[in-house]
Amino acid sequence: MSTNVLTSSSSDLPATGTSVDAPALEAGTPDFSAIKSKQNAAWSSGDYAKIGVTLQIVGEELAEAVNPVPGSRVLDVAAGNGNATLAFARRWCDVTSTDYVQSLLDGGRRRAEAERLEVAFQTADAEDLPFADGSFDNVVSTFGVMFTPNQKQSAAEMIRTCRSGGKIAMANWTPEGFIGTLFKTLGKRVPPPAGVSSPALWGTGDWIEEQFSPDALDITMKLKSFNFRYRSPEHFIEFFRVFYGPVRKAFMALDKGGQIALYNDIYAAVDRFNQATDGSMIVPSEYAEVIVTRR
Image (tube, rainbow, N blue to C red; front, top):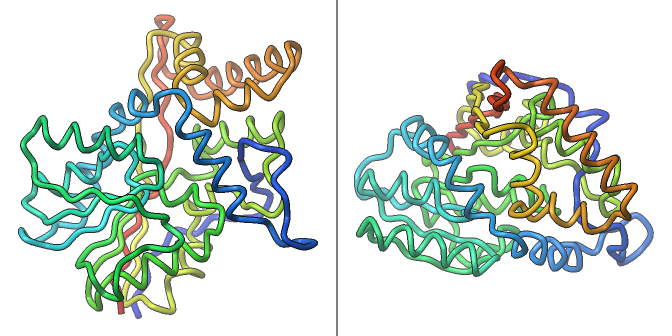
């Protein structure tokens, strides 16, 4: 197997979540069903589609990296409002778009219909995909599957549903980037469910290698950057506070003093990364573009 993986440490990565009271089945074993139920409620709150559409360029770049053959069978896992879905459909692929949040799938369907793209939409849990082994030529996810609580299981499902010689392709936030920093900021003020690892693990070479190399002919991982552009830092924080479920739920979980502290923490993170000098916000956030060729 040939591997070309950029490694980074996965230690000291705090998890991020939206609940402090998720039950455990037994000591040390998270109740993933209960955690997913709470996550579903978080992603259903606000209006993630207003955030998601700003990330469309990432789906386009991932599709270009995969370089799919027209007619390829593509599964978009934890598709959200369909950025990767639309990108692959525009390249004449037969796309099945899945998520466990129905409102997000509905938004993706409306976008596809507006562009007259033929896409199949199906409610599905990334940790238990309702498809046969090797059903797809490409299994993809942009900032989606990384948020599943049972990370090993969702990685195994992506591997299982991809055919031999096919590609598993992902865009995942890294722990060192802006969104990785935001995860840490939220986790400091609102502790995540016990036993749940940081989504940013999916942006580390060591973890990707561990999960995918036994079933891979090749793994490539390229660090890229997406620019968050907003009118001002205040505009960004308020926008995410209203529309981005995890941030919205974090603020709701805190009292007035805690909300002020979280606001100041997020502002400091923005200020650390902000490249704008005119009062606006241009914040690059590092992410890993991962391509796994299935054995």
